[in-house]
Image 1 (cartoon, rainbow, N blue to C red):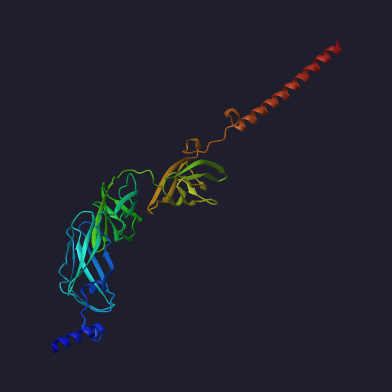
Image 2: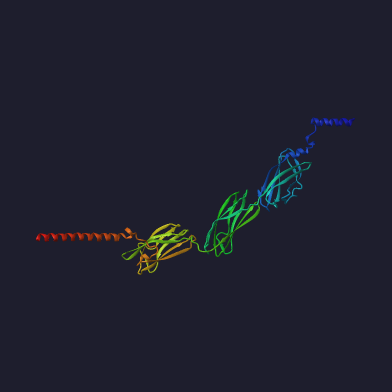
Length: 398
């Protein structure tokens, strides 16, 4: 009978809230409801086949009581979890606190989207399941030639222009372009680009000097997360004669003599496809340049650009060499020489042509001809008048 009263008193006390709250066991379902996944980071965001990636999952206890977690695991049928047993024993997560779980995965299957299951097992009973999508996409960096010589000059520096593009949906880091090849000397050992955003691209200019016909290999290395990748591009290098170099030539030559010296005038034009630098025109033996116009300094000429020049000289002979000295875009010294004929200027290359007069006859000859005709006309008029006077005198005498 006494036991019956005690039981009744305890039941009434529980109903009335007399006993303290810690004496009540928190329901298992209530524990699970307190825990939620707050954030998931995947590095790299998109994996390539064979890549390893890091996944960090942050959970939070949003309740006001501690929750005991027995274990945590990440699983997937297609991707490998490299540290699947790291969280066999976890512990307690206090109210208002966060806890992070880090896993390493390997993309050992082909392209696609895979769902990883994150699982928390609580001490009492119950669990939390959360699915994480992971994308595997194996598009590589794209390297292409946008401009290069059709023919390279042996032992001469040339430029090749490349573009490096990222067709992926995530950024890539540490992009480095390295040229190499047997029989090739490169000005740069490598070119650092760094980070390339999704669908971004960068242009790269390489300066190479081929010593024979060969292949240029352009290695482009980059990182997707912590994973190193490499793409290679083969570019044929054919050597031969190129017609794109600087080519200054003279034209419209005009040689005149005054007193003790000659004056050579003309035009110089860069007929090539590259810059000509530090152009100087000078005469060689047996000629000697003299004041007021000795060796003529032209300076720089762009392709198709021209300039006038004038050189004063003395020459005991009939011919002398005219030398054009200049530097190409690489700074190498170059020169071209042409022979100038003083006795027969018409034999000079690019001799200035005299302007023709009427019907192809020079103006001077036309003037002389008109003068002769006028003189003959005057003589004829005078003769006719003289003859007429003689006839009149004869009639009078009769």
